[in-house]
Image (cartoon, rainbow, N blue to C red; front, side, top):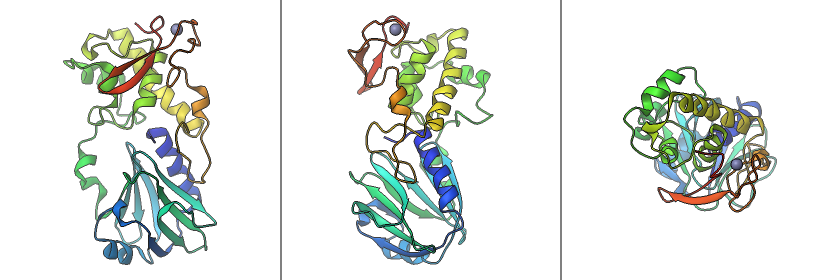
Length: 269
Ligand SMILES: [Zn+2]
């Protein structure tokens, strides 16, 4: 499932490849992915407008258009946004661009969402998001403050988009391994030193995720249809039963808030 680094990678690719281009036509092959407005409206309001800017908030892309509106893309489980010389067979919506190429919106499982809105900041699910972990206003003192009084387990808390934006199951596990913290610890029981380590680990795994252009453990591909490389560097995610890369102990898998969670019982306390 695309998390912050995957969506950021797509944003970079599309900024390079698609920014400034005009939408010549919109082909809707499965209207289920269009949440608002009605498909006919969606099509007519997009035809002829240009892609002005590609923005991101959490795991959501906000594409500013020359009409002043925003095309909001939520990839969810299996969404892909691929700029290509051809129309892709699995596409649900295809944008024909002014350069004769295509922006394919693919989504195998039909959980992804497209919205055309006046102002994407007004969307309720965006207003409820926590801070962006790679932005300057997410400071260590702020993180310490955020954790105060949180009795929930640290791993599900990191995945809570209202607490902090953009982190999902994969990067939460990797950050906790890097920080040496057991995913089942109560958030408010972390010591100052542990909070500092976790704060740095969150930034580090997300930045590395971006540097390696995302992780393709499932069907994630970047804006050019290429797989990422970060999944080749995972320390705990998906490695249950395998030896820890640091201490050789067996990586353990537990369920936390209904999600499989891998960690090293020796390195993570
Ligand atoms: Zn270990």
